[in-house]
Image 1 (cartoon, rainbow, N blue to C red):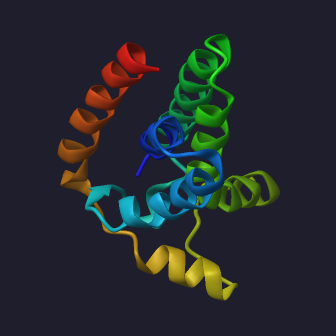
Image 2: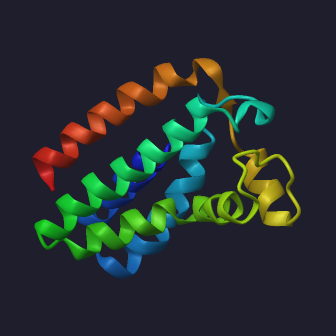
Length: 144
């Protein structure tokens, strides 16, 4: 799933649950969402311009839009839970920066192997992810 979806769902959890319960629930939501079929391309194609642009735009959208809306409206629990929900993917960001490659196929740690194993990435998953991201974007704007 894209970071925008993870962060949006985490934010909604932060808006509806009390903070001590919301943080672990938001973190857990990440793995539930990753089991839903979503967009993905083969590892060997992830160094191309499209994947780099897609990933960069997702990061900017997630933290520019969601972070901006949450912080401007003083919803700090929403922001914290959005961050918690997206945080399991931060390990990939660190790897991208360290290796200067978007190819994430080499899973060295047990957590990496497990996290990669629950992904249901498919090229047709974009037909699930884009409408979901649009709906969540509208809901964020209306209800945060």
